[in-house]
Length: 352
Ligand code: SF4
Image (cartoon, rainbow, N blue to C red; front, side, top):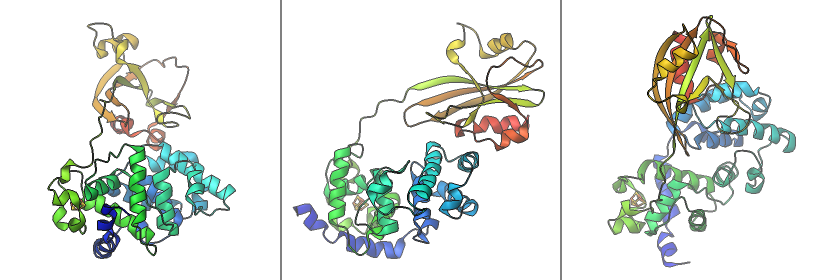
């Protein structure tokens, strides 16, 4: 045990006493059902707690048991996920539910190694499920946890550095109380989410302030180390909502890759514009006599890139020759799973 660990030896005791008084009342904390904990952990990947709660409740109303979800239709699940973003999570969730039914007799596996074999479950989620649902002595480490431990120990740990994350995991696990691994994980999650915030942490309310080196040094915001970020590339696109005889043209994205399996409108790249040409004049040339309405600009951020979208509704008289896609009425359009990036345009088109 090194000097830091010696100072942190009291950490779990203080943390759990605070957690017992202050823990957040979250729907997935009301039972130890592994299905609920797994569902919540998948939804919480990349999404804030407040946004997850209504989706979590709706999913459980529709599919109260894992076996119900395993039997669900792909489209139903994608539709129920609409608005949460990162749709590969929904596809993986369904694939994992079916795998659990067929390969694990319908029971969520207990061990991290088995959990890691399921689609959509990485190191963090496997550890969180193993600890919270099954009391395994492991700690789920994400950026929040690296931040907390970087401050507690005043170390320049960088959340994006995998080997440093593992160091944090070893340290956090060395302090884990054998009788409450799940609560210890959830208490650390609460501390990172509500007290030890990235900016202006609320140290005066922190149960660990006495143990915290960065706090004593008056340097809390110096930690964790800041990763150097490259700017996200921007893709400029024109979204074309083609409308013919009250029907709207949509197509389905490929089964793999970005936003796989979701529906979309037609696209044009801004590079299709000739110099000096406006989008409206290009569309008027492509669809003579059409009624063209601008639907506005939208920006959508992915982790690795950004879409800058200009949307247009193009109401045509003659049916355009299109090799792919389908024409749907507005009722059907409202029920198809669409990516968040395009959902706003769909809402506008439903009102046209
Ligand atoms: S004292 Fe402040 S910086 Fe240290 S762990 Fe608590 S909230 Fe974070």
